Length: 402
Ligand SMILES: Nc1ncnc2c1ncn2[C@@H]1O[C@H](COP(=O)(O)OP(=O)(O)O)[C@@H](O)[C@H]1O
Ligand SMILES: [Mg+2]
Image (cartoon, rainbow, N blue to C red; front, side, top):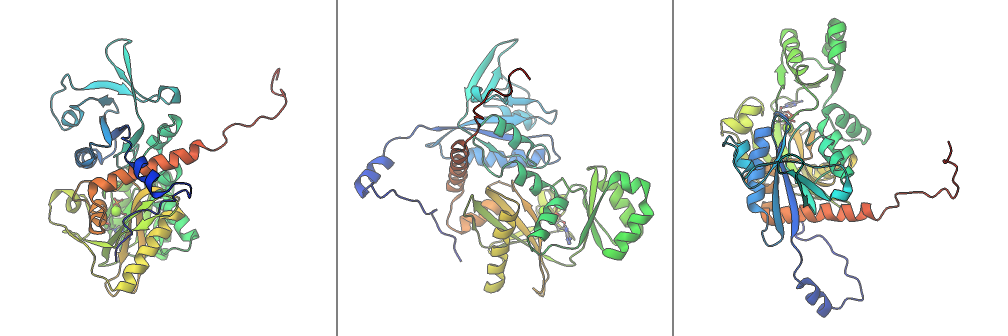
């Protein structure tokens, strides 16, 4: 089960083999790639680890890497020492304040060198290696759209849907994809009529359930509730992180199967991998801290089930309009009778040992090549969007003098 090594490229018929050869050997200008990391979400630290791997692995023959760190305060910083600084090192000369103006005529970053002195650093593309809110949820993507910069990964809408577990599920249900029974409600509604909500949840879902803040990741704020008392504690925890709460029926003793998807119009799916969490469920500790969860590549699944999961992964990716990349996660019952789509992660963990790059590595696409392809996909989408009509000439001056 291998994914194709190369995207099919359309070769114009007027190019013969010789011209193709010479074209590919014209030295290309390096791409000035801004790598965005850190951010204000609970996944700040995870982003720093992912970004360190990404920056180390980017092909130096193709890219000039411009590190851009977002501190927990929200301050934007650039320079060679930014990653070390966000990791706790004292601020040095190698760290400068910067910001990305939404003004596309600036073509990139403005770096502040003291009062009123700005240096313009042009960017050809941006790789947001940010997880969670204000990074993976469409907000940064919106800024990059305004700035007209090509960027890796999904656009505004797919990022926002990928982030919101409740809205994402509604779109997936609409697309006929299998999701676990769930309900969502606002924190305000919970304060006003908790008894009504509890009665509804108990009737519709029963116990145990998983209670989550819809717009978070890395299992932050998620708990499993087996009783009414636990449900109340779990909702109070989740609504501290988000204005709404999602409650899902628990898929008991489920296997956690993950598929990596890559591409724009015609995405490809990796073979499925499996996570064997060290805790009862894959919580923050099991994900990052105790180092005891296992990653199995490929997942041991009968071929038919593996193919089904891959097809569902592509369908789920397309249903919410993903582009570039996403990791699509499933919960599969041990008897293999039920395959449930858990969630789509539009910026999956990206360390060299994370599931997403590992799955493609196993499919014959090494980490460095994967990163190059992701930037190529970003450039491809940007070129397509840039070719669209943007203005409309009504042929009259009706608006003047209004
Ligand atoms: N409905 C569910 N049934 C069983 N386990 C679940 C369910 N929802 C979540 N989990 C467990 O909680 C983990 C984290 O939930 P998930 O929705 O993936 O949130 P996150 O975005 O934080 O990764 C999952 O990997 C799984 O171990
Ligand atoms: Mg998850």
